[in-house]
Structures are given as C-alpha cells and as structure tokens.
Amino acid sequence: MTIQKWQFQEAKNKFSYLVKQAKTGSPQFITVHGKTTAVVISNEDYRKLTRSKKKLSKYLLAPEISADDLDFERNKETWKNIDL
Image 1 (cartoon, rainbow, N blue to C red):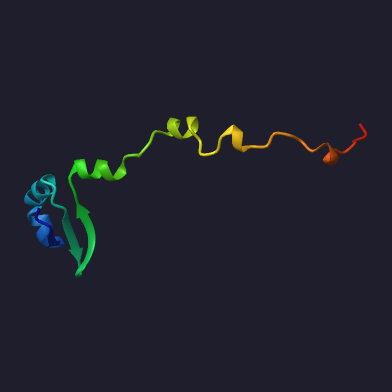
Image 2 (image 1 turned 45 degrees about the vertical axis):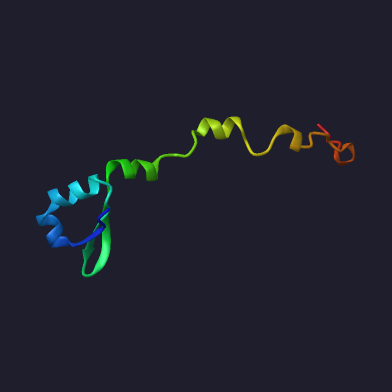
C-alpha cells in the first residue's frame, strides 16, 4: 500500500493517477502550505467508514433497558387529592 502526500498543485496535475492509487486502497494525502487538508480514499474505504454498524430498528427493538428493569408500581403515599 502506497501512502503518498501530494502538494495541491501536483495533485491537480496528476489527479487521474492519484485516484487510481486511492482506488487500490492507498489513501492519498493532499497538502496546502505543508499541512494535510484532504485525503482521497476509495469508495469502498469511504463506505466502510460511514456505514452504520446497526440499523436503527435494531436499537429500537432491543433497547439496553428492559421492562424488567423498570419499576411500574406507584407509591400511593405520594398521591395528591385534587379538587376539580
């Protein structure tokens, strides 16, 4: 895997080559004034980084707290009489 740093102007001039390198799984770092400002990675690597680990429905159907963990009994001493 070839990790390479490119100055911005050079990256513009060799963009096709830079993309081909990224496509093979080698991240390509682009610098401006000596500081890394962007990274070109393959679509596959991008999808791995951005995909959700679980579907939302799995979180909703299997919450970390269950009904057994909750106390549904009310303390009658805390009730208040309200005049309506």
